[in-house]
Image (cartoon, rainbow, N blue to C red; front, top):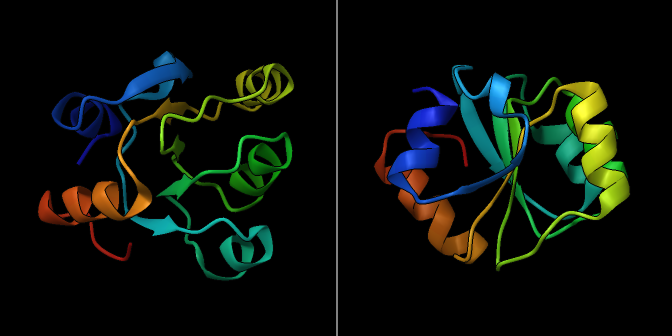
Length: 113
């Protein structure tokens, strides 16, 4: 499934990376501990987190993640947005909790969350 499809189906708000929404999603990972995400997420995953600081972009870039989805209505810091734009990492936001969003993604057929 493409990132643009989940954006539309789950009413996600794009904060940056509009040009990269046609990427295919291979799965997902939900976590807020950066070392855990580095150890367990896989290339092409979407990452669900509440973290908004600059280091999330570094992890997403290192792991070649498709996108970062911020939950609970959180918004990225300006430095985070700037770095995400530089690294071509889409950041989307949702008002849902990580639990709710993970369940909805799983129901859409996005596994490994």
